[in-house]
Image 1 (spheres, rainbow, N blue to C red):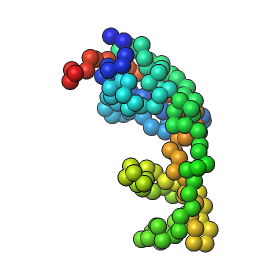
Image 2: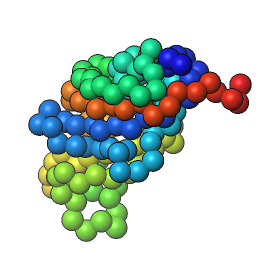
Image 3: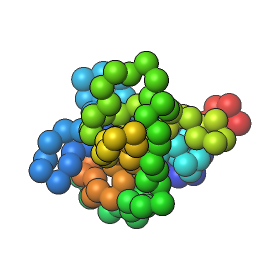
Image 4: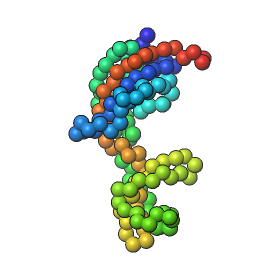
Length: 146
């Protein structure tokens, strides 16, 4: 069976950066299982999976616009130090879990600390980066819940 919208896909993956370093992988654990065509994975990878079958193994390069998007400078914010109460020493590079104005969870990364102001980046950590995947399709099934 080929992967198409509505298929339940089980796959192993390795996600690497431009230098070939592994960022994330499922190969040492359970495969990633998702329903194809629902936006559960990045658009570029979903497109590359369409038409693949159980047993297929391949590598793919996903450009930023088909992954987590380009870096958006509008997602940089300057916060007062009091927003980080309880944290004694906030330094550039630190990451925090936060909620946006709609209550959605997001990761913010500290870019700089100057006096009483902390500049943070709310872009996805992989925004603006080309992503390299090694994929192995474990199974493709019809969604039995429909």
